[in-house]
Length: 411
Image (cartoon, rainbow, N blue to C red; front, side):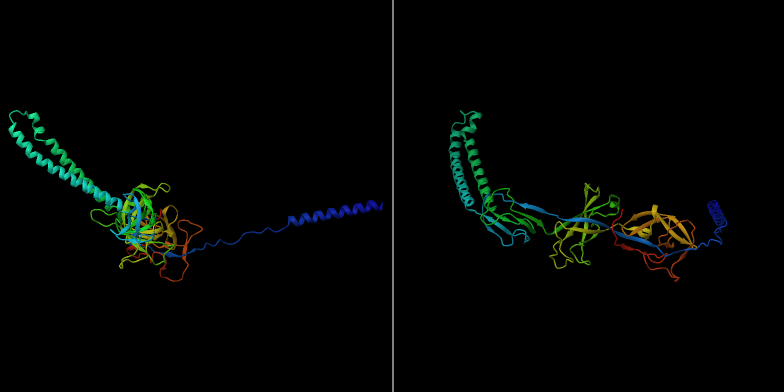
C-alpha cells in the first residue's frame, strides 16, 4: 500500500512539473521591431577633372641594342705580329685606327714577283710593237697577193693583242698583290667599342676567322614593345621631320633622377612572337655619354630599360585619374548631394589617366571613394567639412589645363 502511494505521488509531481513547464514556454513574451529605419547619406571624397590638350607619354619596356655591329675578320691569312694596346674588350677605337697586323713578308715577296712579271710583259709588248713596223712593211709589199682574211695574220694583230693582254693581267696581279699587302694591316671601320677579342700576337688567322666583335658608338637602339592600339598616337620620322621624343630610364642601375633622351626611329614591320605587341626602334645618340654636352649615364648593351614615348597631342578632352574610372567605363558623380552614374567615351588611357571625349561635364564633381552600395540617386555627403574642393588627383572641379602627362602605357 505504501509503495502504491509513493508511485502515485511521484507521478503526480511529474505531471504538475510538465504542465508548469508548458505554461512557461507558452506565455514567453515575443520581441518586436519598433521605430522607423533612419536612412543616412554616405560619406565621400570628391575631385574634379582637367580640360585641355594633353601629350601623354606612352610607357614601354625595351632592350638596348647596337645600331651597328660587326664581326671583324681578316681577308688574308698569316700570323698576327702586332695588336694595338686599345684593342681589348671594352676598349674604344677610332675609325681608321690600326688594330692589328699580319706578318707581311710573304705578301711583300708576292708583290715583287708580280711587279717583275709586269716588267716582263711590258718588255714583250715593246718588242711586239717593234715587230709591228716590220709587219706593216711586209704587208705593203705583199698587199696585192694577201687576201682580206690573211691581213690580220700578216700584220701580227693577234700577237699584239696577246702582248697587251699579258700586260693587263700583270698589272692586275700587281694591284691584287698590293691590296693583299695592304690587308695585312687591319683598321677600325668606324668609331667603335670592342666587345670581344679572339686573337693575340702569334695567332694564325685565315680569311673569315672571327677576330673581334665591334659595335658602333655613335648611336644605340632601344627596341621596345607597345600595344598595337597605341601606334596611331606615335609620331615616326618622315619628310625631314624628327620622330617623337623619348625619355629612357634604367630603374635597376641608375639613380631615380637619371635619364637619357632619344627619338622614335622606326616601326618594325613584325609583331613580337610571344606577346603579339608591336616593336618600335628608339634611337639614342652618343650612348656612352662621351661628349661633354650629353646628359645622363651611359647605356649598356643588353640592359632592360623603360621608355616614355611622347604621344601625339590629344585635343579638347577631359583628363581623369584611372583610379576613379569604374566598371564599364563609368564615372560616379556627385550632383545635388546625390550619386549619379555617367558612362563616358574614352579616346586614350595610360597607366595613370583616362582621356574622356564625351559623357562627362567639365565641371563634374567626381566621387573618389569606393562605395559598398551603388544606386543611382543614393544620398551623398562630403567627408570633409571644408567647402573648397580637394587638391588630390586631377585638381579642382572644372579646372582647365594642358601639357605633357608623364604616364605609362595602358591597355
